[in-house]
Length: 86
Image (tube, rainbow, N blue to C red; front, side, top):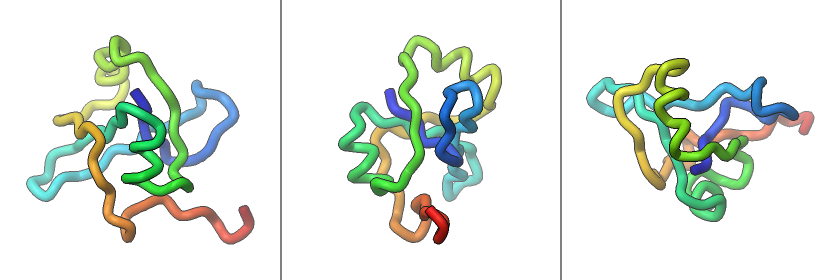
C-alpha cells in the first residue's frame, strides 16, 4: 500500500505519515492500492512511501488513527503543494 507523507525525505525512517481529520472528527489514514491512484486522487506533488499491508498494525502503534481510507479522493484545496523554491 502507498501512504501519503508530510514531506519528501530520502530515508523511510524519516517519513511522517499524513493523517486527515474526517468531517465527524475521526483521524483517518489515507492509503492507496496503487501509485497511479495516489497520483490521481492526491496530486503528483504528494510525497509518499510504500509499506506492506501486514505492517499496518505496527504503524497503528506508532501513529494512532481511527479509520483507514482506501483510495480516497483528496479535494484539490487540501492537496500537498510544492514550495516555491522546489
